[in-house]
Length: 316
Image 1 (spheres, helix red, strand yellow):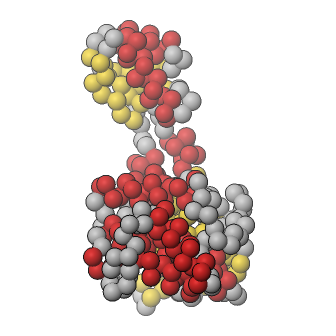
Image 2 (image 1 turned 60 degrees about the vertical axis):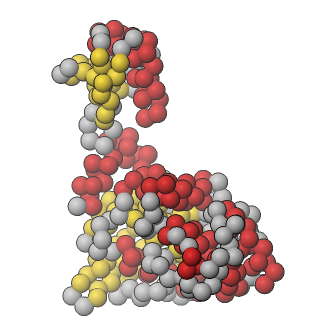
Image 3 (image 1 turned 90 degrees about the vertical axis):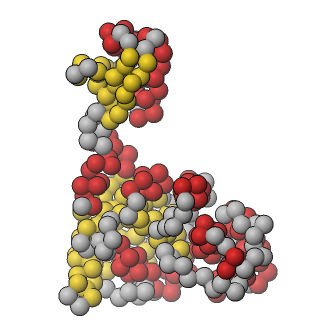
């Protein structure tokens, strides 16, 4: 997905989004309550239950909501002073089904490209590119009213990307999708940051969507920041190995684990296993040790609290 007019994205490690003391109330409801956060990862998940303040934070970043207090910087730009410049450099995929039903996907994406300042010819070329990338090349001339939910979601993603943004904000991109469509959408989202160098802020109440696509997470609850950080660091702090139970000689299995450099500790009718250098390395080592010992794996699960356990506790 090559940009029509490339703009240098903020380098990894710089703050893409920074808020300080952000507050917003709707009557007696405090949607945001002193939120101070710095987002610098190439893909960050904004996680929280419905009503946690995610939508208000995103709308504040986009300049669609004016906070009662605090300040926001996006890509180094003060949101209060220059919201138009921020919106020019951002893409936004809304959660709600807001597409005009009597337009084609191509016409919508071309129109959005022109609204964002691309000349007609560049808008047509970019629309063709992004519709191909999201898997809608063959359906681009069909009316939106004939689209499935998944095709509508892909159209919304295409219009968010058509002007080559530096940062794209995705609001519940898997909303309403079946399992197959959800997997495809998450793969597309992951490609944005990992291959196309577009920073991502993904809002979701689905934990797996965030852990599959993002490098960092920001968790909100009742309008307050609960926790933030790199997912890899959180896994490292929480992960306590795996518990394995085998059908066969547990002693032979333990010896095979040791031969592969893994540490095994007896636990009930199984063993807790540590090491491997990474989650994938640990799981591969346990599998191969079972094969070496000629035993079958009857149970394999996290031994202690997982990242998912910790984040669920934070959300609730």
